Length: 110
Image (cartoon, rainbow, N blue to C red; front, side, top):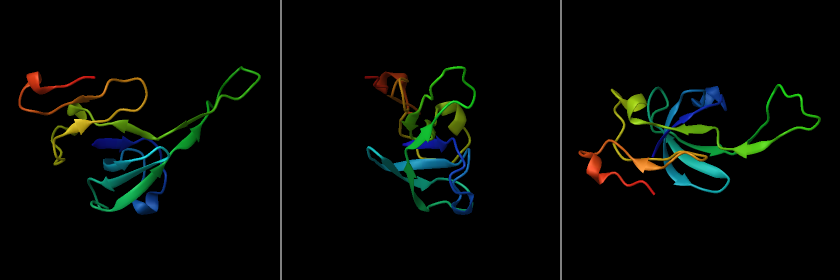
């Protein structure tokens, strides 16, 4: 499943904001992925869940969430790239569906 990294995790390994990855295994605390494009194409990497908190808040307490720093690849973002066509994964409350098949009738949305 194609995804895009949203944070600079380790630029020396090619893990920076905008890096395109393909999920090989999705776990509860780690994503095992392969870098899809660029100098590090084909390298397997592990993406951990990270703690995110808002930088500006007027609340008397700190809100924290532990999320994967990735976003799904949609059809518009992958246009012109040489990624394999297949299912799309999104994190959060966004719908999961299949894209880039021959016809819209084959789409399955849970």
